Length: 78
Image 1 (cartoon, rainbow, N blue to C red):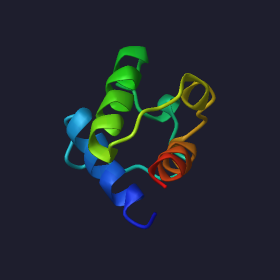
Image 2 (cartoon, rainbow, N blue to C red):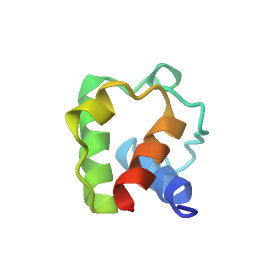
Image 3 (cartoon, rainbow, N blue to C red):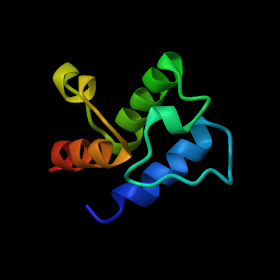
Image 4 (cartoon, helix red, strand yellow):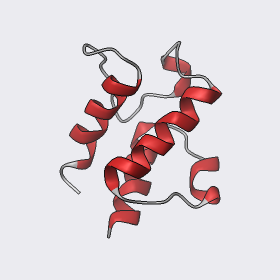
């Protein structure tokens, strides 16, 4: 969906408490120093709340980057 990525950018900025945070579809956890395992769970929970979805465990286990996260969110929102 067209609004997923911009909404996700806003969500990342809120979760990471950084209004200047810049992410792209290629952004990975390794690119953000604060993106550890606890932050990952927090991020996924915030995504579920913000987008009204529930991630099946298999969908989040193999997420490689933000672009993959967008694809899963879009699929679950349909």
